[in-house]
Amino acid sequence: MSESQADPGTWPGDRFEIDAVAIRDLSRAAAFEQLRAAMNQGQQVALGFCNANMLLKALCSASYASTLKNLVLLSDGIGLDLCSLLFRGRFFRENLNGTDFVPALLGGDARGRTLFLLGAKPGIAEAAARKLALLYPQHRVVGTRHGYFAPAETDAVIAEINAAAPDILLVALGNPDQETFIAEHAHRIDARLLMGVGALIDYTAGAAVRAPAPVRFLRLEWLYRLLREPRRLGRRYTIEAALFLSLIVRLRLATLLRARRAAALSTS
Image (tube, rainbow, N blue to C red; front, top):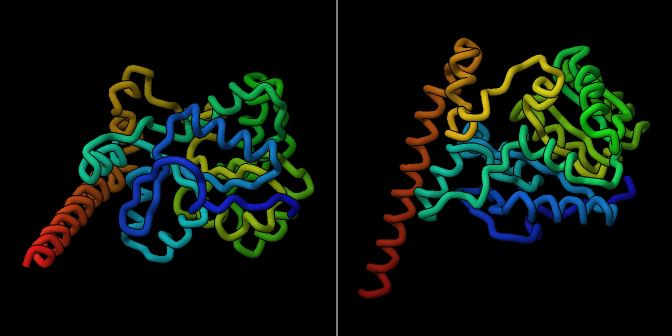
């Protein structure tokens, strides 16, 4: 591909690092400005929205943590805020979940962009494309592809994306699959901005229902999703959430213990 790839390690702005994972601490406006500037300059950016479940996977898997080093990560959800509070004494500047971030990015961009939607069940991406055409007429969806493809079909999927040559590729394969797909194949994909967007295509198509605005304002969207889909999300929002909290507390205590030992050695 012709675009140069942005190095996540040199992405400007404050960042929060935990173990081998680095999450950018940006306002939405600052993130928009940087992404649009990169696209306008023909620079490719691989973007991920890091929530508690994603961070837990990375903290438990060195290979997944290594994968995430290839992406610019933004903070998504109350779990990341709690983690930041524990380590830094403050929340992230803003909650930049992809379901709100991407529509705001598209809606606020007067320059027409082309998009390719990859993911969800057959027919859903097409329905989402029709909705996006109504919501953001300045942009154009140039291709769609459902997310149910075998590894052997990956080359054909990439060829389909490249034939459309979109400015923006939205990848909705769920984590860790979407981040792995982006990290492994970004250098082969002719798109300027690649984003792992989770359930965004389902929400846009109307195949899934978001929590009401007051519930989202109270940071309880996770509870709404759990109540709607207890069998699918029960483990994620109970057992795995508890594991996440336990793990970050242990990491924080280990950090404090190392600092105390270092201070003791320096004064001895």
